[in-house]
Image (tube, rainbow, N blue to C red; front, side, top):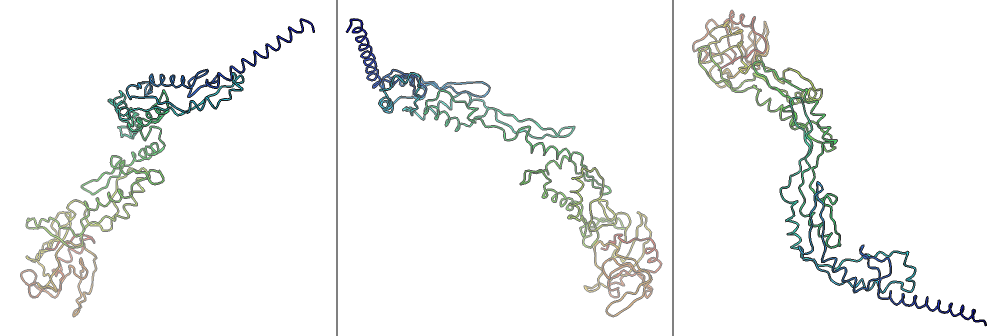
Length: 455
């Protein structure tokens, strides 16, 4: 064997032994050190022993800073010392080193190994709460405000929301605690939803629908005509009647609609009510009872009013009536009426404020059975001639004007005298017996519905 050949063989053996030595040294080294391109929770631990990694992590935690990102690009920091954060040795780090494939360490150079372990730290929870509470972001917070609709001189406008910067303290504490426990260095309060936000924004679909509904109501003006008084229903009142239904749609609140009509009836119905009345002698008295007066037909008026509102109408009209009087002024007896004074046995008929008839009469006999009923009544009918029938009589008359069932005003050709105290013992069966010429004059000038005031 030549000398050159021997040298070549020797060099090969040397190279093999050198490589084997390097390989063995590497295998031995990485039996207690982390392989190249190794990281734990993002921290580079390549070539480090488990003990050294523990020290590095401890140093990292001692210098720990949690950066808190807030609204408007503001930020604050919480330092480890503020919450007494401490590192406790983590056995998992030793397990990671021991579980490495150290015999193939040379293959790890292009094979990064990223490990995640639970950071073994402790901190003072009370101090964390106190530190969070003392953050600047909790001072002088502006509360959020929902977008809303405002009435203006020109209609309705959507007032934009105010986001404010009010934080949910519990959420902030929870997010900071999670960040500390997971070793995170940043927590974004906006991203984590820690701010209390408005519930309604300017582009809210239901808000837009509500405005559209109110815009329609802005054209509504219902003027109720009560002759000498008016009652106006417009957008100022109606805007509070728009409510959101279960399906999210905006509609008129039926309860408020009905209540409004009911209150109209309470205010303006006069049927059978007690009234102030000035007598022919100028005395002011109170008269109650009877069937005269006005009654709003509430159910029908609700339907009519709803239709007017939904159509966006501006109208002047009367309400729907169930019963109507003769005059709609506050004094609904008006200036055309018949007055019967039972005590003085006197009857007057005023036509448009002019005294047309003033006559003595005979009214019902003064007892429980035949006494003429008091109150204010509406003239029910007119008939000429007529036959008045009772249990024991049938009396033909020329002029019959009933106002309370079978009680009415009529001529009484069988009587030669009227007035005085005839009624006390020899009165009628309840009717107002009237001299024929006076009955004729009333009959020719009176209309059905005219009030008959009896007292």
